[in-house]
Image 1 (cartoon, helix red, strand yellow):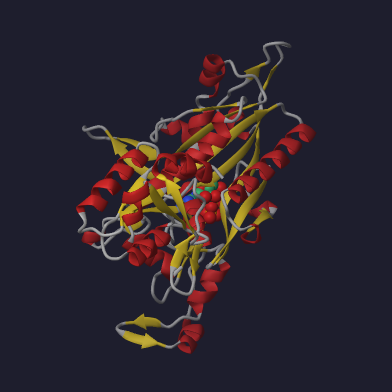
Image 2 (cartoon, protein in one colour; image 1 turned 135 degrees about the horizontal axis):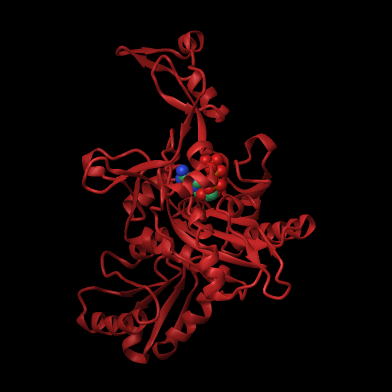
Length: 437
Ligand code: ATP
């Protein structure tokens, strides 16, 4: 984990939010490579959930909605975590996070400037009673007092439900069908931590799939989406042995869920959820008093909803953790080519030989119209390979003296480190065929 946090900052994937002012807990900024990786994850998700299907359409709803939405959805009353406070140091923890509480209860504390040992802490520690803590972030709108209170959305889901009628009538989709959305959500998390894993501002990618209110049919749709989502992560290279399903017990289910299962990743801080598949029943549409009229039978009913709710930031963190490998002479991000920020890097063998640089620039300009391409002419070739391996660039193209004679370049594969000579006129096609694996 430490390696990933340091790589993320050093190479421009993720920086602590507002760092020059001392940071702000639970907020992160994505740098030049981070934004590429994030966009690639979102694009692949959209491709598989919207473009490759006939039964799903997308929307992009506003972050701030009429507060009545959150009253109807139950979030103003039920979107809570139980919070307890350590009476010695006043740190707060979620009462349901037993491991964190156990760890804190046997960790040294600094009390009034003096370090108290683990044994001392174990003997003296006391916790407050759990108190419910609402996770919605309040905002105030308008310029005159009293300002109008509203909320930053705590989940992107509700924007889909309140537009259900609009989408049905404008897209003419018939049940079963789904609405997909990607966007920011905000939660006033009590204990942000584990890098970006628990943030206060994060992005979700969600599908709300509407089905007939039917026990058996909805159960098989739930099973179908469970498999689809798990396979998506595997298809983008996450090692199957680091993935598992975990079913929610009745007492941990969210207020809206009839049943729920998490997709978990074997993170350095333990198995952790990064996507939930929820059977929301008719909870949301009935709370918003929305129904559906079957165009053929004219029958009116409240559809049930199967939801797949993934986190962009958590997936990104797990894609990084899973891809990061240390080999004898290099660190390598073996990330799927569809996700890697750069697809290819171009180098002139020597930066002080104008004939090589000009030729390399021609190749670079040609490739960058098709792929996000890096240029590097610093240091020696070994260092450049090292640097591209560390950020996951699948191919490096080197222009050397042989290029000047026969118009071929060296293409080096990140994973195998094998090099091949390819004619300049064929490099683009060569890379295209390799990158669509
Ligand atoms: P947790 O139990 O970890 O708080 P949750 O069950 O409340 O998560 P959901 O409400 O199901 O999470 O949200 C769906 C997805 O949104 C999660 O699987 C996760 O990927 C993402 N997500 C939720 N909360 C956060 C957060 N604080 N930071 C980053 N991503 C989050």
